[in-house]
Image 1 (cartoon, rainbow, N blue to C red):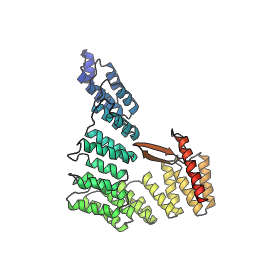
Image 2: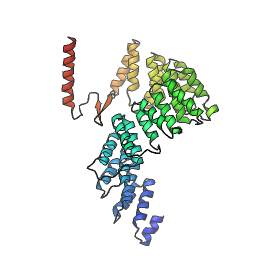
Image 3: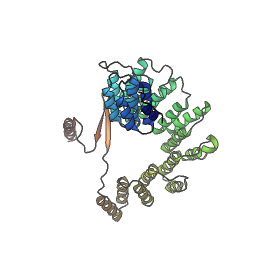
Image 4: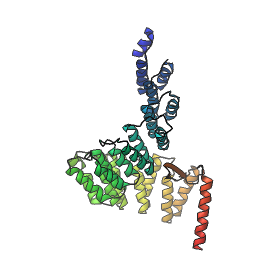
Length: 397
Protein backbone atom coordinates (compact mmCIF):
# COMPACT_ATOMS: atom_id res chain seq x y z
CA UNK A 1 0.00 0.00 0.00
CA UNK A 2 2.80 2.41 0.91
CA UNK A 3 4.69 1.53 -2.25
CA UNK A 4 1.56 2.10 -4.34
CA UNK A 5 1.08 5.50 -2.70
CA UNK A 6 4.66 6.45 -3.57
CA UNK A 7 4.19 5.41 -7.20
CA UNK A 8 0.82 7.17 -7.60
CA UNK A 9 2.07 10.38 -6.02
CA UNK A 10 5.01 10.51 -8.39
CA UNK A 11 7.50 10.82 -5.54
CA UNK A 12 10.94 9.53 -6.43
CA UNK A 13 11.87 7.18 -3.55
CA UNK A 14 15.25 7.89 -2.02
CA UNK A 15 17.96 5.29 -1.42
CA UNK A 16 16.77 4.47 2.09
CA UNK A 17 13.14 3.90 1.04
CA UNK A 18 14.15 1.77 -1.97
CA UNK A 19 16.42 -0.37 0.19
CA UNK A 20 13.67 -0.92 2.74
CA UNK A 21 11.22 -1.87 -0.04
CA UNK A 22 13.76 -4.41 -1.34
CA UNK A 23 13.87 -5.95 2.13
CA UNK A 24 10.10 -5.99 2.65
CA UNK A 25 9.27 -7.52 -0.74
CA UNK A 26 12.04 -10.08 -0.33
CA UNK A 27 10.76 -11.15 3.09
CA UNK A 28 7.34 -11.81 1.54
CA UNK A 29 8.77 -13.93 -1.28
CA UNK A 30 8.41 -11.26 -3.97
CA UNK A 31 12.02 -11.56 -5.13
CA UNK A 32 11.20 -10.41 -8.68
CA UNK A 33 9.87 -7.10 -7.34
CA UNK A 34 12.93 -6.70 -5.09
CA UNK A 35 15.21 -7.30 -8.07
CA UNK A 36 13.36 -4.74 -10.20
CA UNK A 37 13.50 -2.13 -7.44
CA UNK A 38 17.23 -2.72 -7.03
CA UNK A 39 17.85 -2.49 -10.76
CA UNK A 40 15.91 0.79 -11.05
CA UNK A 41 17.83 2.53 -8.25
CA UNK A 42 19.84 5.39 -9.84
CA UNK A 43 22.46 5.16 -7.08
CA UNK A 44 23.11 2.17 -4.89
CA UNK A 45 24.71 2.24 -1.45
CA UNK A 46 26.52 -0.75 0.03
CA UNK A 47 23.46 -1.25 2.24
CA UNK A 48 21.31 -1.67 -0.88
CA UNK A 49 23.77 -4.11 -2.48
CA UNK A 50 23.94 -6.14 0.73
CA UNK A 51 20.15 -6.08 1.15
CA UNK A 52 19.61 -7.49 -2.35
CA UNK A 53 22.33 -10.08 -1.85
CA UNK A 54 20.79 -11.09 1.48
CA UNK A 55 17.42 -11.57 -0.20
CA UNK A 56 19.00 -13.94 -2.74
CA UNK A 57 20.65 -15.90 0.08
CA UNK A 58 17.40 -16.14 2.04
CA UNK A 59 15.82 -17.65 -1.08
CA UNK A 60 18.82 -20.01 -1.43
CA UNK A 61 19.79 -18.53 -4.79
CA UNK A 62 23.46 -18.43 -3.87
CA UNK A 63 24.71 -18.16 -7.45
CA UNK A 64 22.73 -14.95 -7.98
CA UNK A 65 24.06 -13.61 -4.67
CA UNK A 66 27.63 -14.43 -5.68
CA UNK A 67 27.27 -12.73 -9.07
CA UNK A 68 25.97 -9.64 -7.29
CA UNK A 69 28.91 -9.89 -4.89
CA UNK A 70 31.34 -9.92 -7.83
CA UNK A 71 29.62 -6.91 -9.38
CA UNK A 72 29.81 -4.77 -6.23
CA UNK A 73 32.06 -1.71 -6.60
CA UNK A 74 33.06 -1.88 -2.91
CA UNK A 75 32.65 -4.92 -0.71
CA UNK A 76 32.50 -4.55 3.05
CA UNK A 77 32.55 -7.19 5.78
CA UNK A 78 28.76 -7.58 5.57
CA UNK A 79 29.08 -8.43 1.86
CA UNK A 80 31.66 -11.12 2.53
CA UNK A 81 29.71 -12.51 5.50
CA UNK A 82 26.49 -12.71 3.49
CA UNK A 83 27.89 -14.71 0.60
CA UNK A 84 29.99 -16.98 2.86
CA UNK A 85 26.92 -17.71 5.00
CA UNK A 86 24.91 -18.29 1.82
CA UNK A 87 27.20 -21.06 0.65
CA UNK A 88 27.02 -22.65 4.12
CA UNK A 89 23.22 -22.42 4.05
CA UNK A 90 23.01 -24.61 0.95
CA UNK A 91 25.66 -27.04 2.17
CA UNK A 92 28.49 -25.77 -0.04
CA UNK A 93 30.96 -25.36 2.79
CA UNK A 94 34.03 -25.86 0.59
CA UNK A 95 33.15 -22.75 -1.43
CA UNK A 96 32.48 -20.86 1.79
CA UNK A 97 35.96 -21.67 3.09
CA UNK A 98 37.46 -20.76 -0.29
CA UNK A 99 35.85 -17.32 -0.07
CA UNK A 100 37.14 -16.87 3.46
CA UNK A 101 40.68 -17.63 2.28
CA UNK A 102 40.27 -14.96 -0.40
CA UNK A 103 38.99 -12.53 2.21
CA UNK A 104 42.06 -12.86 4.44
CA UNK A 105 44.67 -13.31 1.70
CA UNK A 106 47.32 -10.56 1.37
CA UNK A 107 46.17 -9.81 -2.19
CA UNK A 108 42.57 -9.06 -1.15
CA UNK A 109 41.13 -5.65 -0.44
CA UNK A 110 41.95 -6.27 3.23
CA UNK A 111 38.43 -6.30 4.57
CA UNK A 112 38.93 -7.66 8.06
CA UNK A 113 36.67 -10.50 9.22
CA UNK A 114 34.65 -9.97 12.36
CA UNK A 115 33.13 -12.30 14.96
CA UNK A 116 30.12 -13.27 12.76
CA UNK A 117 32.58 -14.17 9.98
CA UNK A 118 34.54 -16.48 12.25
CA UNK A 119 31.38 -18.06 13.64
CA UNK A 120 30.20 -18.91 10.12
CA UNK A 121 33.62 -20.18 9.03
CA UNK A 122 33.95 -22.42 12.09
CA UNK A 123 30.50 -23.81 11.25
CA UNK A 124 31.71 -24.53 7.70
CA UNK A 125 34.76 -26.38 9.07
CA UNK A 126 32.47 -28.42 11.32
CA UNK A 127 30.12 -29.15 8.42
CA UNK A 128 32.77 -30.93 6.33
CA UNK A 129 35.17 -32.07 9.03
CA UNK A 130 37.91 -29.64 8.02
CA UNK A 131 40.10 -29.93 11.13
CA UNK A 132 43.29 -28.52 9.62
CA UNK A 133 41.51 -25.38 8.48
CA UNK A 134 39.65 -25.19 11.80
CA UNK A 135 42.95 -25.18 13.70
CA UNK A 136 44.24 -22.41 11.44
CA UNK A 137 41.05 -20.39 12.01
CA UNK A 138 41.43 -20.86 15.77
CA UNK A 139 45.00 -19.55 15.56
CA UNK A 140 43.80 -16.58 13.49
CA UNK A 141 41.16 -15.80 16.12
CA UNK A 142 43.73 -15.92 18.94
CA UNK A 143 46.29 -13.87 17.01
CA UNK A 144 43.76 -11.11 16.32
CA UNK A 145 42.26 -11.27 19.83
CA UNK A 146 38.76 -11.90 18.48
CA UNK A 147 37.59 -14.12 21.35
CA UNK A 148 38.65 -12.29 24.49
CA UNK A 149 35.10 -12.34 25.84
CA UNK A 150 34.51 -16.01 24.95
CA UNK A 151 31.89 -15.30 22.26
CA UNK A 152 33.39 -17.87 19.91
CA UNK A 153 34.02 -20.59 22.50
CA UNK A 154 30.85 -22.50 21.66
CA UNK A 155 31.69 -22.43 17.94
CA UNK A 156 35.22 -23.69 18.61
CA UNK A 157 33.95 -26.49 20.85
CA UNK A 158 31.41 -27.53 18.21
CA UNK A 159 34.00 -27.41 15.42
CA UNK A 160 36.56 -29.55 17.24
CA UNK A 161 33.94 -32.08 18.36
CA UNK A 162 32.49 -32.49 14.86
CA UNK A 163 35.95 -32.65 13.28
CA UNK A 164 36.89 -35.60 15.48
CA UNK A 165 39.12 -33.80 17.98
CA UNK A 166 37.07 -34.15 21.14
CA UNK A 167 40.12 -33.60 23.38
CA UNK A 168 40.70 -30.17 21.79
CA UNK A 169 37.01 -29.41 22.29
CA UNK A 170 37.39 -30.25 25.98
CA UNK A 171 40.49 -28.04 26.22
CA UNK A 172 38.57 -25.07 24.83
CA UNK A 173 35.70 -25.81 27.18
CA UNK A 174 37.90 -26.03 30.26
CA UNK A 175 39.61 -22.72 29.44
CA UNK A 176 36.41 -20.93 28.41
CA UNK A 177 35.55 -18.04 30.74
CA UNK A 178 31.84 -18.52 30.03
CA UNK A 179 31.78 -22.32 30.14
CA UNK A 180 28.72 -22.28 32.40
CA UNK A 181 26.67 -21.62 29.28
CA UNK A 182 24.01 -24.22 28.42
CA UNK A 183 24.99 -24.32 24.75
CA UNK A 184 28.64 -25.05 25.57
CA UNK A 185 27.75 -27.79 28.06
CA UNK A 186 25.33 -29.33 25.54
CA UNK A 187 27.90 -29.21 22.74
CA UNK A 188 30.49 -30.99 24.88
CA UNK A 189 27.98 -33.62 26.04
CA UNK A 190 26.83 -34.29 22.45
CA UNK A 191 30.44 -34.38 21.25
CA UNK A 192 31.45 -36.93 23.89
CA UNK A 193 28.38 -39.02 23.02
CA UNK A 194 29.24 -38.89 19.32
CA UNK A 195 32.76 -40.15 20.10
CA UNK A 196 31.48 -43.07 22.19
CA UNK A 197 32.61 -41.64 25.52
CA UNK A 198 29.35 -42.34 27.29
CA UNK A 199 30.66 -42.25 30.87
CA UNK A 200 32.38 -38.88 30.28
CA UNK A 201 29.22 -37.47 28.69
CA UNK A 202 27.07 -38.49 31.66
CA UNK A 203 29.67 -37.14 34.08
CA UNK A 204 29.55 -33.79 32.26
CA UNK A 205 25.75 -33.89 32.45
CA UNK A 206 25.90 -34.34 36.22
CA UNK A 207 28.50 -31.56 36.57
CA UNK A 208 26.29 -29.23 34.52
CA UNK A 209 23.34 -29.83 36.84
CA UNK A 210 25.54 -29.46 39.91
CA UNK A 211 26.47 -26.03 38.55
CA UNK A 212 22.82 -25.00 38.44
CA UNK A 213 22.34 -25.32 34.67
CA UNK A 214 19.03 -26.94 33.62
CA UNK A 215 19.17 -29.09 30.48
CA UNK A 216 17.01 -28.48 27.44
CA UNK A 217 15.66 -30.97 24.92
CA UNK A 218 18.91 -30.92 22.88
CA UNK A 219 20.97 -31.73 25.97
CA UNK A 220 18.76 -34.75 26.64
CA UNK A 221 19.27 -35.93 23.05
CA UNK A 222 23.01 -35.90 23.75
CA UNK A 223 22.53 -37.79 27.03
CA UNK A 224 20.33 -40.45 25.42
CA UNK A 225 22.77 -40.76 22.51
CA UNK A 226 25.56 -41.34 25.01
CA UNK A 227 23.53 -44.12 26.60
CA UNK A 228 22.87 -45.63 23.16
CA UNK A 229 26.55 -45.59 22.15
CA UNK A 230 27.58 -46.97 25.53
CA UNK A 231 24.90 -49.65 25.70
CA UNK A 232 23.63 -48.16 28.98
CA UNK A 233 20.05 -49.43 28.80
CA UNK A 234 18.90 -48.88 32.37
CA UNK A 235 20.43 -45.40 32.49
CA UNK A 236 18.88 -44.48 29.15
CA UNK A 237 15.42 -45.69 30.15
CA UNK A 238 15.75 -43.83 33.44
CA UNK A 239 16.62 -40.52 31.78
CA UNK A 240 13.93 -40.99 29.14
CA UNK A 241 11.09 -41.76 31.54
CA UNK A 242 12.06 -38.93 33.93
CA UNK A 243 12.30 -36.24 31.25
CA UNK A 244 8.90 -34.70 31.83
CA UNK A 245 8.74 -35.12 35.61
CA UNK A 246 12.30 -34.07 36.41
CA UNK A 247 13.09 -31.54 33.67
CA UNK A 248 9.68 -30.50 32.37
CA UNK A 249 10.58 -31.67 28.85
CA UNK A 250 8.10 -33.63 26.76
CA UNK A 251 9.94 -36.26 24.69
CA UNK A 252 10.16 -35.38 21.00
CA UNK A 253 10.73 -37.64 18.04
CA UNK A 254 14.51 -37.23 18.44
CA UNK A 255 14.35 -38.62 21.98
CA UNK A 256 12.24 -41.58 20.87
CA UNK A 257 14.75 -42.13 18.08
CA UNK A 258 17.59 -42.34 20.60
CA UNK A 259 15.70 -44.89 22.68
CA UNK A 260 14.81 -47.03 19.68
CA UNK A 261 18.46 -46.89 18.61
CA UNK A 262 19.52 -47.92 22.15
CA UNK A 263 17.11 -50.85 22.33
CA UNK A 264 17.95 -51.91 18.79
CA UNK A 265 21.71 -51.88 19.37
CA UNK A 266 21.46 -54.41 22.20
CA UNK A 267 18.99 -56.62 20.36
CA UNK A 268 15.79 -55.78 22.24
CA UNK A 269 13.99 -55.42 18.92
CA UNK A 270 10.52 -56.33 20.20
CA UNK A 271 10.66 -53.49 22.75
CA UNK A 272 11.98 -51.07 20.14
CA UNK A 273 9.22 -52.05 17.73
CA UNK A 274 6.55 -51.65 20.43
CA UNK A 275 7.90 -48.19 21.28
CA UNK A 276 7.64 -47.20 17.61
CA UNK A 277 4.05 -48.40 17.41
CA UNK A 278 2.97 -46.62 20.62
CA UNK A 279 4.89 -43.32 20.40
CA UNK A 280 2.64 -40.24 20.05
CA UNK A 281 4.04 -39.31 16.64
CA UNK A 282 4.63 -41.35 13.50
CA UNK A 283 8.17 -42.77 13.15
CA UNK A 284 10.14 -40.99 10.47
CA UNK A 285 12.71 -42.24 7.97
CA UNK A 286 15.57 -41.89 10.47
CA UNK A 287 13.86 -44.03 13.11
CA UNK A 288 12.80 -46.77 10.70
CA UNK A 289 16.31 -46.71 9.21
CA UNK A 290 17.94 -47.15 12.62
CA UNK A 291 15.57 -50.01 13.40
CA UNK A 292 16.31 -51.68 10.06
CA UNK A 293 20.06 -51.42 10.73
CA UNK A 294 19.53 -53.06 14.12
CA UNK A 295 17.53 -55.83 12.47
CA UNK A 296 20.42 -56.50 10.10
CA UNK A 297 22.98 -56.58 12.95
CA UNK A 298 20.86 -59.05 14.90
CA UNK A 299 19.72 -61.03 11.83
CA UNK A 300 16.00 -60.49 12.46
CA UNK A 301 14.41 -61.00 9.05
CA UNK A 302 10.87 -60.80 10.42
CA UNK A 303 11.25 -57.36 11.98
CA UNK A 304 13.51 -56.33 9.11
CA UNK A 305 10.71 -56.89 6.61
CA UNK A 306 8.42 -54.56 8.57
CA UNK A 307 11.12 -51.89 8.73
CA UNK A 308 12.15 -52.22 5.08
CA UNK A 309 8.53 -51.90 3.95
CA UNK A 310 8.17 -48.63 5.91
CA UNK A 311 11.49 -47.21 4.66
CA UNK A 312 10.50 -48.03 1.07
CA UNK A 313 7.07 -46.49 1.58
CA UNK A 314 8.59 -43.25 2.89
CA UNK A 315 11.18 -43.08 0.09
CA UNK A 316 10.30 -45.38 -2.82
CA UNK A 317 13.28 -44.24 -4.92
CA UNK A 318 15.94 -45.14 -2.35
CA UNK A 319 17.22 -48.70 -2.85
CA UNK A 320 18.92 -48.84 0.57
CA UNK A 321 16.16 -50.84 2.30
CA UNK A 322 16.11 -53.42 -0.49
CA UNK A 323 19.90 -53.70 -0.37
CA UNK A 324 19.72 -54.29 3.38
CA UNK A 325 17.03 -56.95 3.00
CA UNK A 326 18.98 -58.65 0.19
CA UNK A 327 21.94 -58.94 2.55
CA UNK A 328 19.74 -60.30 5.35
CA UNK A 329 18.07 -62.86 3.06
CA UNK A 330 21.48 -63.99 1.80
CA UNK A 331 22.81 -64.43 5.35
CA UNK A 332 19.67 -66.40 6.29
CA UNK A 333 20.01 -68.43 3.07
CA UNK A 334 16.51 -67.37 2.08
CA UNK A 335 17.15 -67.52 -1.65
CA UNK A 336 13.54 -66.87 -2.66
CA UNK A 337 13.50 -63.66 -0.60
CA UNK A 338 16.82 -62.61 -2.10
CA UNK A 339 15.56 -63.26 -5.62
CA UNK A 340 12.40 -61.25 -4.90
CA UNK A 341 14.40 -58.21 -3.79
CA UNK A 342 16.76 -58.46 -6.77
CA UNK A 343 13.83 -58.64 -9.18
CA UNK A 344 12.22 -55.61 -7.54
CA UNK A 345 15.42 -53.61 -7.80
CA UNK A 346 15.93 -54.59 -11.43
CA UNK A 347 12.34 -53.83 -12.42
CA UNK A 348 12.55 -50.39 -10.80
CA UNK A 349 16.05 -49.85 -12.27
CA UNK A 350 17.38 -48.98 -8.83
CA UNK A 351 21.06 -48.34 -8.33
CA UNK A 352 22.89 -48.24 -5.04
CA UNK A 353 24.09 -44.74 -4.17
CA UNK A 354 27.90 -44.75 -4.46
CA UNK A 355 29.90 -44.18 -1.30
CA UNK A 356 31.74 -40.92 -0.83
CA UNK A 357 34.77 -40.09 1.30
CA UNK A 358 36.85 -36.98 1.78
CA UNK A 359 40.32 -36.07 2.97
CA UNK A 360 41.76 -32.69 3.94
CA UNK A 361 45.20 -31.83 2.56
CA UNK A 362 46.85 -28.44 2.74
CA UNK A 363 43.68 -26.82 3.97
CA UNK A 364 41.65 -28.12 1.01
CA UNK A 365 39.04 -30.88 1.18
CA UNK A 366 39.23 -33.50 -1.59
CA UNK A 367 36.12 -35.60 -2.20
CA UNK A 368 36.15 -39.06 -3.77
CA UNK A 369 33.09 -40.96 -5.00
CA UNK A 370 33.26 -44.72 -5.39
CA UNK A 371 33.79 -45.52 -9.06
CA UNK A 372 34.16 -41.85 -9.94
CA UNK A 373 36.94 -40.24 -11.97
CA UNK A 374 36.08 -36.57 -11.61
CA UNK A 375 38.99 -35.58 -9.39
CA UNK A 376 41.48 -33.44 -11.39
CA UNK A 377 44.39 -35.64 -10.22
CA UNK A 378 42.56 -38.92 -10.86
CA UNK A 379 45.22 -40.32 -13.25
CA UNK A 380 48.11 -39.46 -10.92
CA UNK A 381 46.28 -40.96 -7.92
CA UNK A 382 45.64 -44.21 -9.82
CA UNK A 383 49.32 -44.40 -10.82
CA UNK A 384 50.42 -44.04 -7.20
CA UNK A 385 47.89 -46.64 -6.03
CA UNK A 386 49.08 -49.10 -8.71
CA UNK A 387 52.66 -48.55 -7.55
CA UNK A 388 51.69 -49.12 -3.89
CA UNK A 389 49.77 -52.28 -4.85
CA UNK A 390 52.73 -53.58 -6.87
CA UNK A 391 55.09 -52.91 -3.95
CA UNK A 392 52.70 -54.68 -1.55
CA UNK A 393 52.55 -57.71 -3.85
CA UNK A 394 56.34 -57.80 -4.12
CA UNK A 395 56.80 -57.54 -0.34
CA UNK A 396 54.30 -60.32 0.44
CA UNK A 397 55.69 -62.52 -2.32
